Image (cartoon, rainbow, N blue to C red; front, side, top):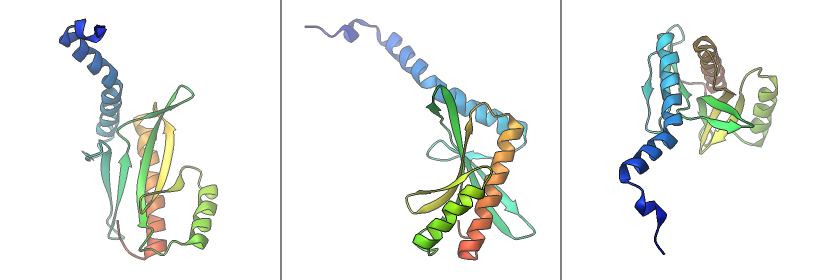
Amino acid sequence: MSNPLLKIPSCILLASLIFVLSPTAKADDSVKKRLDERGIKHEIDADGDFKVVYSYTKEKRTQLVFVSGKTETVNNTSIREIFSPAANIKTSGIDGTKALELMRESRKNKLGSWEIEGDILYLVIKLPENLSSSELETAMDIAAETADDMELKLTGKDEL
């Protein structure tokens, strides 16, 4: 029995692969365009996420914010994440009591919630992909400020 894929010219297979992968590339390009429209300096990290460094000169602090380089689909809606690290859970003393406090904080937040990935506590905002450049910047500002405030509260220093 022969494999029907072997009869398809390799250039067509390559073009099909590029077509399948192109939605992610378009999404990345759309984030770059929106960041550029707002004059936001960024770099792309190893995961393909857009990394932005916020500088709070008066407080002598910095805060990282990431815009995910990919989207996820929920009920036909494309969702993008904006996230900012706040603390290392192992070194900042986050225990059960503090975790409950973070859950209470998440309830108060109008945008974003606290999540843990690996050993890092993040403020994560999940919004529809079709944000305007202004709305994206606002979400990033909120993520940076909220995460930086929590970092200071938990660690007392500019840790991450």
